[in-house]
Length: 434
Image (cartoon, rainbow, N blue to C red; front, top):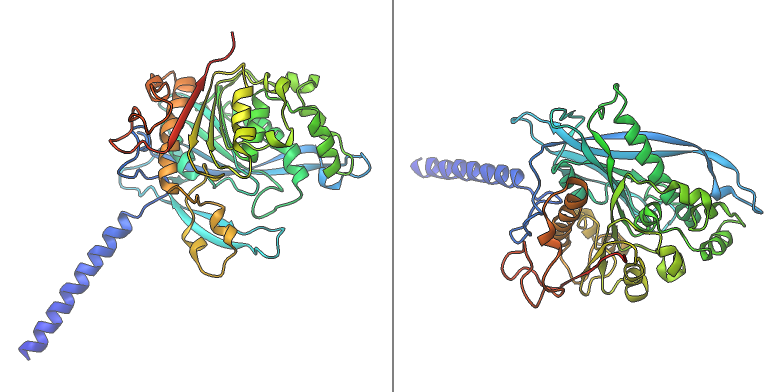
């Protein structure tokens, strides 16, 4: 009898210990964007708890290039869904965790069926905004092809916690859920960015909006990854070359609708917005395809931070991203290079669902880097984007984190990095021509 009692007691203690261990592990679950032990100085989240909301917009009377034929362009009302992160009033006893709904796969590829999955973020859905600290700079975020507004939550949440209004766009016909022909992405990226930028700025002046009074639309930053980089560079002043008109026409039944985004076009020149103060371009696509040339890149005059992988096999490196960096001679610019990385220098880490056997390899390689830990990349991106946007949108004294004494991180530890942690990186810096 005593022996049975002892066994029951041991079992009960074991269950309690397991329960406590489970609760602790649950509380300490790694969320995309959390700081690793070797995260650089500016990577951790900021002082604000944040809220998140989903908004829907419609950009009316846009060219429906998917139905263009014989050079004739029909129009349609273009829907755009966005996610908005913002500093919020969150009670101390409220758990700041949110569940995001995402999918893997591609709607236009039968070999890659859509697979729903969820992941956690550190925000509170529909929380009341922080209205006592004035207005916060606006940051527009544009995903790759294919992608979604939730592809960079490690960065969007991080920036919001540091006092920004961050808005990420689901670019219609360019997401996992609604992938369509590439011509739509070519035409609509920069146009979507401008439309949403203006819509959010308007909401900041609308007394009925939750964003009323908290959007500083005179200090705007743009962030784009891959095709998102292609778009934000165009918005910022890098008008497309005339070559793109031919390429676009071949893909769209002879449409010339993209002409309005070329550098020599009067409508394009009029669209350059002085409220935009900084641009971050992760692995921007297009240079190897003639999207820009020497003259068109001269139009980029806004401070720009490029991020690249030295082995990028999508956008190209020497003749791709680095050629854009070298050609943007009228912009004060930086370029951070992850040595031996390919194209995925921007997204969240691979979700657990992408590790399941039998899936198409691209479900994992939509996120993963062969030579780098994606969580490590996320922390480094947070650090440098915080420094760059902090300088240009918040007037922060962060120059020491960018103006490094050695361009190769292997030669000497970089400012802001822990001992032995700044390896495999290169930073270039060029001032604008006077």
